[in-house]
Structures are given as C-alpha cells and as structure tokens.
Image (cartoon, rainbow, N blue to C red; front, side, top):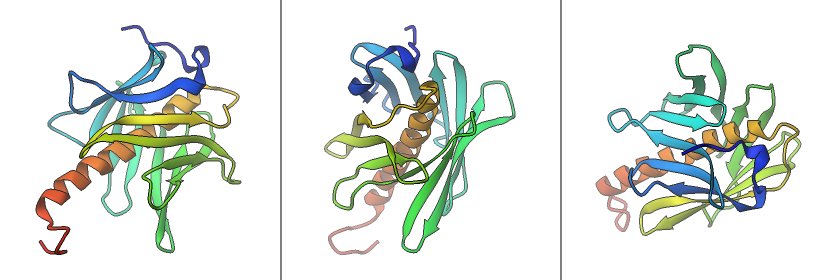
Length: 187
C-alpha cells in the first residue's frame, strides 16, 4: 500500500483506524487514502514501527511515571522528535517536540470523554483526537485538525506520537483492569 503525504489529503477526514489483520496496528487515513501506519512489536509493547510517505521510524517508550517517547528514523540513533510527560499540580501534560523545532502540548480535552488535544504553547488547538472504542477494544480515533501547520508533514509525527501514547496507555489500562476489581476498589 502506497502511503500519501499528509499535505495531499483532505484533513477534515482524518482517522486512526485499527488494522483488522493486526490487533495492535493502526493506520492513519483520510477517506480511502493511507497516510501512515503504526504497529507495535508483539514481544516488546514499548516499541512501535511508524511508516510514512517519507520513511520508516521507530517509537520507543522509556520511563514509567514520567514516560518519554522517542521518534527515531529506522537505522539511525539520532532522536528526531518525541513526547515527554510532566505534571502540573494534579494534571499531567505532555510536550511534543518535532523534527522542525515545533513544540506542541498534548493534554486531555475533557474529564468525562477520553478526548485529547494537541495545542500550541499559547493554547491554540492544532488537532483534537476523539478515541473510538468497541467495548473495551480501542478501534481508532476521529481527528479534527483545527489549524494546519505550515509544514503539514510534521503533523503526522505529532499525531503518531500522540496516538502511540494514547493507545499504549489504553492497552496498559486493559491489563490493569484485569487485576483490579473496580467495583470494590480492591486488588
């Protein structure tokens, strides 16, 4: 499947969609056009492979309470971008650093709905991700682009870093939910 650059698709139709062939694989699509694929290594859940029109990358998570995610081009050791978590009082926020020097913030967009927002440091929203689930399974996300960056391709990296973080947290929550009796609040 040939991947299309983000600058050549309809940004109003962006979606992360679960790959029916791989339970931990997603594709970023605009209608029928595939823009990127993101899949986890089945043996090492903290390692994922991102494929875009301009190349293949790997995403690696490090840390537990304050996770960091590195974006590296396949075969290289130089970090091209990443996501770093930090706490502000009781809220956590996540800084996304992109290869072009652009920095954005990933944060929860609401309390009751598991939506996420990618914003500029001044608060202007760039994109909004609304996860879609089927029961406990994360099927994908609807993406609304509020403000296209001057270089649209950097948005692919931000969406991949954000989706990697969101989906990995979802997978981890599913594992923990199997251990915890939420009704009683006991292990």
